Image (cartoon, rainbow, N blue to C red):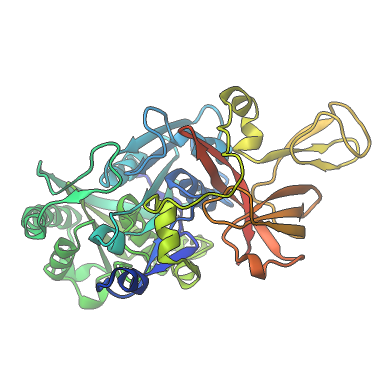
Length: 467
C-alpha cells in the first residue's frame, strides 16, 4: 500500500498578535498569534517552500504533483506548473491543481496515495477575512507537502493509511464567490448541527474498518474551519485526553486547506513507531484517515519540525498586515509602477527564473548567475553545464537599504551575496529587519512573488537569513 515517503511543513516567518487587532479596533480579539504570509508570498510560493523541504535528500522524486488551495494565485491557469518548475521536476511529471475549497487538500492527498507512481501532494492556504471578523482573527497561513508512494529500501514508508472513511452532504455553511476578498459564514449553530453527525458517522466507519477502539488511538487530529464543531467532535470521540492534538489555534491560526496536513506533520515530528494517528477533516463533509507510523519515521523526520518553526518568527503590525492583504491602500513610493514580466522571455528562461539554475564553466569551474554562454573568467564559449543553486547557502558580501523602491513593505534591502562553491549575485532580501542586516550574514534562497502587475505574478527568488 502507498504511504507517506517524506513530508515537510512551511510556516511563514511573520506573526500577528491578536492583541494588536483588538487594540486597533477597540474590541477583544482573543489571545495568541496567527501566522502571516509576507507581502511577497502567496499559496504558490509557500507551496514551493514546503515541496523543497519535503524533497530535500530524497532519491526517489515525484512523477506527478497535485496542488490544493482555496486561494489560487491564478484562475484559468494551472498554478502547480510554477511549483513544478521551481522544484526542477522533469517535464514528464504531471502537475495539476485541485483548488477552490478547503476540502481539496484531503482530495489531493488521497489522490496522491491512490496514484500508481510517486506523487507529491502540496497543500497551501492564505486565510483572510474582513477587518475585525472571525476569519481574520482565527485564520492563519501555511503550506505542507507529502511525497506519497509504495516506498523501497532507499525511501521507506514513514506512515501508511490503514483505514479511511468519508461522509458528504450538500449544505451552505461557508462560501465565497470569485472576486470576493473574504468568505461568508452561516450562523455557527447551523454549522455545528451539520458537521457533528457527519463526523460521527465517518469516524465510526473508519474505526470499524481499522478494527480500533477510540482508546487505542495514540493521536487524534480534528481540523476544519468551524471551531465549535471541531471541539465538539474531538471531545465526543472517547479517546484518551492526552491523545487529542493541539489544534495550533494559538500559534498559527487555522490554515484552511493546509491545516489537517499541518497538524499531521506536527504529529509525525514526534510520533513513535507503530502508533495510530486519526485525522478528521471537517470541510463540506467529513473525511477520516487512520495512519500507522513505521520504524523508518525516527530517522527520516522533517528537517525543520513544525514546533521549531512556530517558536520563531517576527512580529508584524496590524496596519502592515492590512496593507499586505489589500484592505489598506497606502501611498506608494515615488517611482514608476512595476511592469508585468513578458511571457516569451519567461518561458525561454524557465530553468533560471523558476528553478534558479545557473551554469558552471567546464573549462575553469567558474559559476555564473544568471547562466551564460561565455565564461567571464576564462572566456570559454559554450563550455557550460547547468547547476541548480536554490539549495546552496550564501553569505552577504555587501548590501544597501533602498527607501524609494516600489514595495508593499518598504524599505527594500538589496544585497550582493556569494554562494558556497563560487558564484556572486545581487538580489533582494526578505523576512529581515533592515536595521539588523550585516555583512557576513548567512542566507538561503527562497521562492517569492516579487510583485503583481496587470494581473501577472512575477515569481522569482530572494534571499533570507538562515535561522
